[in-house]
Image (cartoon, rainbow, N blue to C red):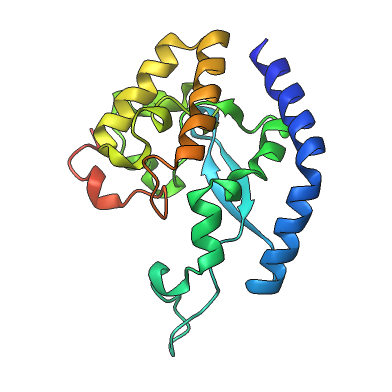
Amino acid sequence: MKRVFDFSVSLLALLLLSPMLLVLAVLIRWKLGSPIFFRQTRPGVGGRPFRMIKFRTMLDAVDEFGDPLPDERRMTRLGHFLRATSLDELPELWNVIKGDMSLVGPRPLLMEYLPLYNAEQMRRHDVRPGITGWAQVNGRNAVSWEEKFKLDCWYVDNQSFWLDVKILFLTVKKVIAREGVSASDHVTAERFRGNDK
């Protein structure tokens, strides 16, 4: 039932939002250049890699050695807007249609952090990663990573259709209010040091 719900809602959302997605794509191409989309390998169910797609939010600026400049120097006003409103996440609906992701589930982090999870934290990969999740509606970037992982595992143990509906409703509410928003949902490896048991 969850997979049918994910597929149906994502397909309908892409169709309804296609005019807005086109406008955003044009703005990104104009302000940031090409490519329009940001693709990155993230862990899915069981930690298996998949290519997640988002709207691009940063410039490809580099220093004299060819290394990317710090995020704060590459971020643009358009990028801040896309992240603050979570509009950069909309292309992930395609990942949901493909079956890589779910509408609701633990947010996929980076592949390089997999060895740093302890056994309990690794349980977040027992389900498909989500565009939004229980952690996102209970603090988003305002809570510690340890607490986020606890919330993710709570979702794994308590997932249901009606819980997903509740999380989707709360997500819309929080996005409109812009609660708990920061520039990125990336986690730094240092936060995991000592947890790789």
